[in-house]
Length: 103
Image 1: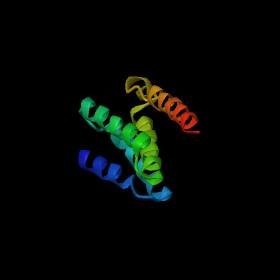
Image 2 (image 1 turned 45 degrees about the vertical axis):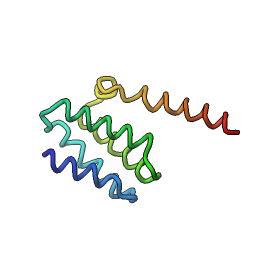
Image 3 (image 1 turned 90 degrees about the horizontal axis):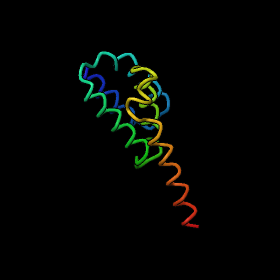
Image 4 (image 1 turned 60 degrees about the vertical axis):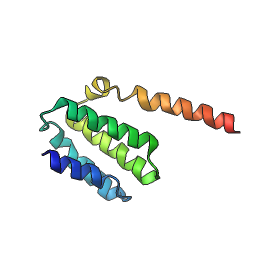
């Protein structure tokens, strides 16, 4: 199961919405099959980092799809358990502040 999840995560970097959406949908049911909670935590952290700091728009969008699929698979409690919501929100405030400073 772990190998399949890793391949799906790799597929999320493909700059095609249909591929990203399909990988996200396939990722959801597999998340509950992973035995190691630390591995799940690592994967979620990687998705958040890629979503916030990806090189291309496709990388960031794919990571967002992947994170959504992971949360759907783990359950809504994953938002709090993995501290998912505060990270992007604080990052958007930081980015907005940087943009104002650049003007």
